[in-house]
Amino acid sequence: MAVNNLPWEAELFYRRLMSVVDDYGRYSALPQLLVSRCYPLQVEKVTKAQVAKWMKLCSAQGLIVLYESVEGKPLLEIQHFNQRTRTSSKFPANLGTPDKCITNDGHMTAVCVDEVEDEDDSKPKTKARKRPHSIPDDWKPNSNHATIAEEEGVNLERAALDFADWAVGGGKTYACWDRTFSRGLRGWLGNSAKNKQTSGVTLDPLGKPLKEWK
Image 1 (tube, rainbow, N blue to C red):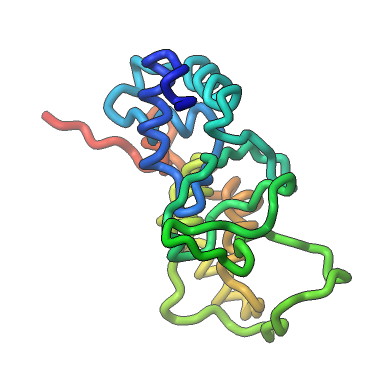
Image 2: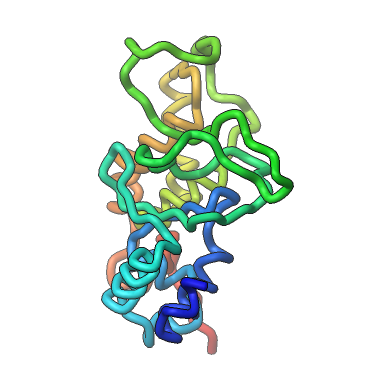
């Protein structure tokens, strides 16, 4: 097996990575994010450079594929992950691979549905376009938003409150509020939330102050 050709540190990284990726074997390839997710109790011992090196070793053995989203964000995908897919992927597919996926029960999925933000309205859509509407009373951030907030260093809870106030107070209407919030986290909303963070306080990956235990 290719994994047996890895140094033990890289093999351990690969094993931990398998518990972090989504059902499609995909995840962010940002080394700093992988350090916190794969080694939550060893963030002071494992460096970004080490993780970047282990990713390259895994890629060289054909265990993972490193690629970029259309927005230029680094991503990875574990090859032959064979996990039963229960939800759409949180990360866009590698455009260099086929669109179809094989689940662990031997069935071929119709198409790997991804949360890709396509701003080109001239392209044909496979589904009917939703009508713009006010933000639902029960709207709340999802797991994909949590990932974006972690990558951007944004306090997700505070950003969600600001977003809801902006949507309701301005009478905004959008067809997809989840996508609108994703864009906000990467833009104006994320910058606003960062500016409100308390200076001089140690923050966790979600932008929240770490608790001091006495």
